[in-house]
Image (cartoon, rainbow, N blue to C red; front, top):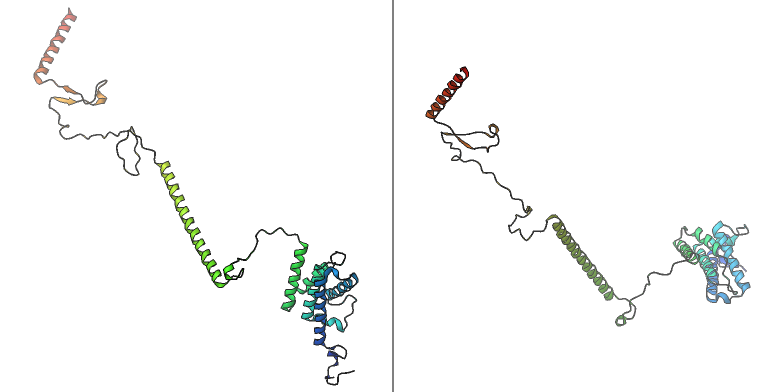
Length: 296
């Protein structure tokens, strides 16, 4: 019978058997959550006929989420319930439990591809809850379908029996932060020290290569930065003084170019005037004698 207390101005939003649209949504969400809980709890103990009915219902909902209409092409008043965000989240939850739970014979469900398509179509939904649920379903499907490498790092929680087991409190977190800072400062200081030692070693090697080793015979001290050449002595040429340039009146210096086979700078004696006259007289007499012998 009709409800005498309801408002009959909007008959499209009210059904005498099911109530208004919001009540229908609540009923649909409750039914989907119940089916999802039964599949997750019972799993392989559900009879095959019942499990087939559940999977068929989930597949019909997936088809509407992907195509916007039911599998038979009809959009009745019941299909409008799947436009509500709460119903979409419940459908995704049911599909995920159906994919994870095996059948009674141990086989897996064949709804993985259809659930992936429905989640991909719903991940950009305007409602945040629907989008988050779709992304969670996609993550689980990817983890089941793609083989993973074994874990490299094992994440564990520090267990402190004095502070309530493995629960980390604020003091323990503060101690951990301070210890990490000390470790970082120590590592930085060690790295700087290692760099300084490396630079000193490189400097010593460079000096050893540039400066040759000093011999034991070399006892003379050398200036810093000026390498000494062993066995090579530089002779400084002394300039002539005023006394050495004084020449006697009876002597003369013949340049080296005018003499052959003689040492340069050799002093030669010059004859006096009397000696020159004697030499001229003797030379004249010799000349006369030679001319007389020639006439005879």
